[in-house]
Length: 287
Image (cartoon, rainbow, N blue to C red):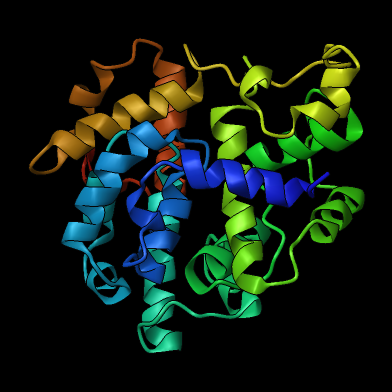
């Protein structure tokens, strides 16, 4: 039987989505931007924002020269807006420390604001064709099911998971990088969290989880609530500021969220996070 990477790569050759950050002409900056945007956000929502972002700021220096408020406005409704702040900070660091070019080494990538182990490995692999284990949620789910027989991986990457992922890397750096994106695509399109399509999976024949009868997950899965949460409140407040052409009075913010205590707490947290700036007596704006 061919290896797991061989089968997944053959499948990927036939089923890969055409995405701008995967094209041969995509810059390392485009890849880095996509990785920031794709954190906890589906591809369908990222595509139009990524396209507009790259048209406006095609290089790190372009974003670094822009205001943080412009970055937040362009981030729109992707959610988790602190990612926009970190991406702006990363662009600034790239200009100041790397002459405007996205760094190639794993260590230098990790040193950028907002870049952790996963993002560094993804950019090094997908932008520069290096040989690294790329472990996002989709990859971890595929490996958990195929090798461990678990419906879902644990909450954090374990040493055993990383060793398994590294053991599966093809020897060729270019092929290893393509395997990373291929297994990620398999998790996104076939081995999905809620409704896996095992009948369409190229590695179903020896998937431990499927052969065991696709047992239910043991324990509880953490699901993020939305309605009535601080996240929703913060999003409502930011939406008002994004759409405004100037400073917004507190009275206008009061109209979008009825719970005064929660609203004031969320507004204060937005100021603390650097997402909102007080600009006068009860006036607020994007930074």
